Length: 66
Image (cartoon, rainbow, N blue to C red):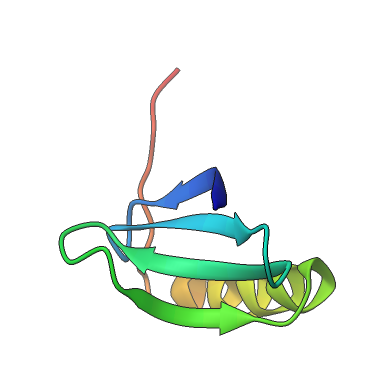
């Protein structure tokens, strides 16, 4: 069983917590297959911060108007 908690507009995927293994999984929206797995929430946050920094450097981001 999984608990969905976020989605990624850039990668077109969503993130869930696998309640059996207690891992964070990145799941492709179309295929519903696991793209990547993270051991714990701390590792997940660290990787997301690194990816976000790289995306900003490479100009990959969305601008939203309020």
